[in-house]
Length: 167
Image (tube, rainbow, N blue to C red; front, side, top):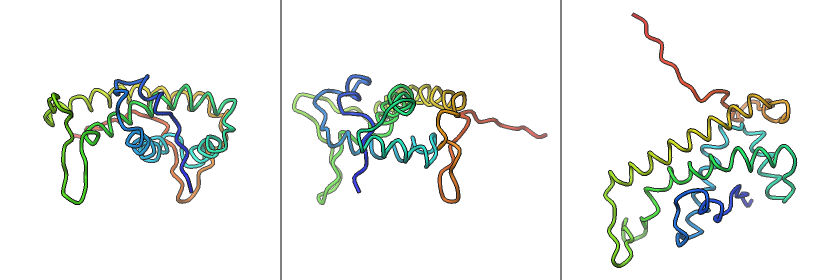
């Protein structure tokens, strides 16, 4: 079964700092993974599957189109950058793990890459909070948001964590 890709390569390149010469296949593989690992827990399995089915059938419309295009897409774009940045200059093959570096370019060290990934993650967190707030304030528009059962992922209704000190 083919997995629907929720944002285009062009959207990712124009919304983030991704270079126009990056391999579209690498981008799509990263987006696909981030959709499943990061977006699905925010929407829950049922709403995630509804949106995926509509995107695959080119029938995404109304409130669902607003949800995906306005609220999910920016989060997905920045989370993709944060998640994939450490891998985008790396090739994993039979000969081992190598770093690709264009002629005349200087490769960043891992701390610089981690710093960039952290900045992208901070932007992703901002958009994730906006997505969660939108879903909590408009959950009546998306019946699938509250119909998850058994092994389904139930969506998070908060992006905040708290620490309780006993003592």
